[in-house]
Image (tube, rainbow, N blue to C red):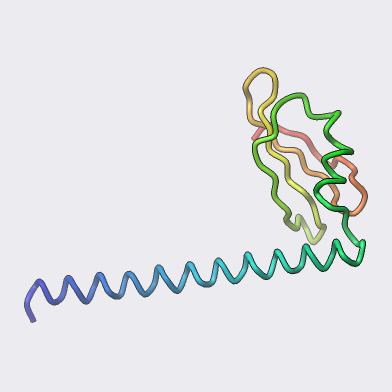
Length: 106
């Protein structure tokens, strides 16, 4: 086989792996989004809007990212923000009741 053909086969194989991995990640994201939606609809977790109303007075800076995740099996919102001194911080909030679990440097 020529080097050109081997290179093409290798690139094709890499493309398949990348596309398959991205499909799996997208599927995981959809599953998580559906789980969040179902949890909010059943009132087992608070919406991000309600969480932000509760914690906003405790955030001294600009919010740059929010994420829903499970920490040790517990549903939490992770809120990243830049504090007044320019440091990135992460706040973890219990998604069930809005209680701040942790607020730390990133």
